[in-house]
Figure 1 (cartoon, helix red, strand yellow):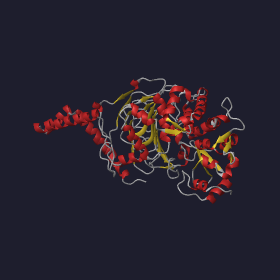
Figure 2 (cartoon, one colour):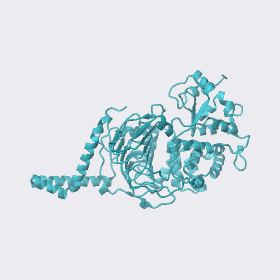
Figure 3 (tube, helix red, strand yellow):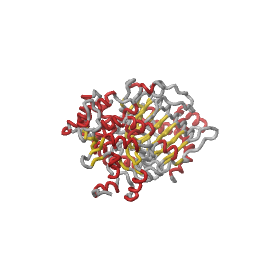
Length: 584
């Protein structure tokens, strides 16, 4: 083995993704015998790709212009770090985007960067102390992101672009949903969710690999038409940026490495095209090496469903043909790659607080007439094609997306909420960002977060989520075909009730974090006062049992109905509380 510096050896032995130091002899043996395996990372697509067609100005033509422009403004906060003020100038001044939309994409990418919970809580505190929009803007101006990675992030928004060519064979053309009203409906949604499809991720990167590499090239390596030449060279910084999308390992090894660490490993220089003299990569050798090594994601959705661990969290309901399917990869996947997929939970109450869920990307699919409680800190959650159900979630560190659902209630603390193609859904959320209303929604209701469980505040601290700022009541409509604000409403205080989670858990949280908005707290107080007055009136009247019962039915129907419903729920789900005492 040729000589390498101590710093290079340290990076190899203690990579950012590795859990334990790696044996260099084993690494060398694997390199020699089996070569490198690369795959496309799932998280940039699951969390980062907004589930809506991107602005037309995010095309490759404009992104190439931005790539050239930022390099000429290196001293003005554009390269190698892109500051919010510079991106605002580019997005609003040159791409003609609305300021809110420009901030949306900037903030989504920033949420993908590695930060400690303490850093995120500190940012929330800074924003909560701002007294005006000007002060908020002043704080935002101090934020910056990696320029080249941000360009890649903007490019992958094309994942959900409607393709006219593909639409000719009937796969992508947007059309109204003609779904059956039956809860057993299993027809395919017209909007295929590519964000969770690892085959789509791999195909997207392979189909656009040349464009992605050209987007990262220095301007002098491009022709006048922004294309590469046979002699084009790719900088080390560009390959480091490409690690945002690609990672890998060596066959039979247990560690995951960012792309650039593998590409810069000395035994691979001939294959990856790296020159130790120029400290750059040959464009065509690098592209050929990437194409030869790219394979399926071993921690993606497909692998999870095919070979993941099956979980017996739900049972088959007698008299139905549906069988709940729940799988995870947490027994083999490292942190940031954990995944839990559950499907076809039908007429059940599923309650879980487990290490299996901690930090996992969760997909809930085709669940009907059920109550699902996932009371652990989660990385992201997608709820898709569910009906007539209630979902109570632990804090969601990144994105909570709801798609193609009818008549469901979602209760969660989350960094971001986005919804598309929903009908009659209610969202009780606490979120530091504006909820995103994408296309195809009807009769959406937003309401304040209204529950708690003993570990909630501890879980919020672990995910870096604070109680302020809270923008649950300031949704943002992000769709072209309908900007009508009547698509949503805020829940009237007179219809508001708190939600009780009836499970025994250890923890210190005893009330709703951050409290309730004053109007809703006042409505609860007035209702409680009326109940107390009624109880006092009944007591002082000294009615017989028959008259007392009759009076309750006549004047206290709403109270009796609510209590009966609550008691029924408590009886039906009380048996599941044992899940919180012993979990795998």
